Amino acid sequence: MEQLLSLFPKLTEEQRQQFEALLPLYTEKNAAVNVVSRKDIDNLYTNHVLHSLAIARFITPKPSTRFIDLGCGGGFPGIPLAILWKDCQFHLIDRIGKKVRVASEIAEAIGLKNCTFQHGDSGECRRKFDFVISRAVMSLPDLVKASAHLIDRKSSNRLPNGLICLKGGDLTDEIRATRRDVLDVPLSDYYPDMDYYSTKYLLYCPL
Image (cartoon, rainbow, N blue to C red):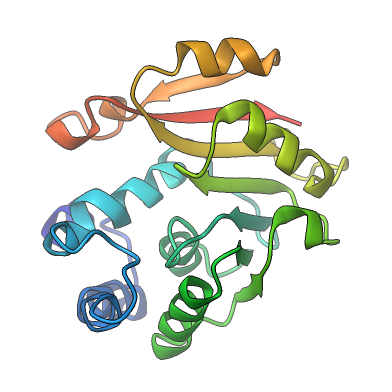
């Protein structure tokens, strides 16, 4: 939590309380539904919350920007970003119902008002969004294919609408197979003193 506060020093008191509540809530929920690796729960802020918030180091969205967290699992990256960007809208979707329930219950417990939830896959969502966000869900070509119909062609942000995802490892083949313009940003640029991020990347693909 200390790293989070040092990297995002302008949090309101409400935001601080909401971020602080995540560890006990996820610890409790994780005992019944494994949404975070049980050996990793003590690293929730370093490995999951800050990982999600790397997207906030890349883009500053206008109010009312619409995000869909595709394959949200227990709520990453959607919930941390929804805490940070109160004026934006987030729709979290996952094919595993019990994980969506965990995310929904945590959002309700901390008083998030800018999130909606859906049990299903991307093909069952008929809404349009400015950005698809995702965290280690599927290969980049498959993710682009699953995301394309969700993007509104009218952009209100300086950054064109598209996909922003978080992935790790050697992504050379995935990026090449996508056959689109993909910007890859090493997360070590945002978190230079944290070894966990030495092989992790943010990928942006306009759609």
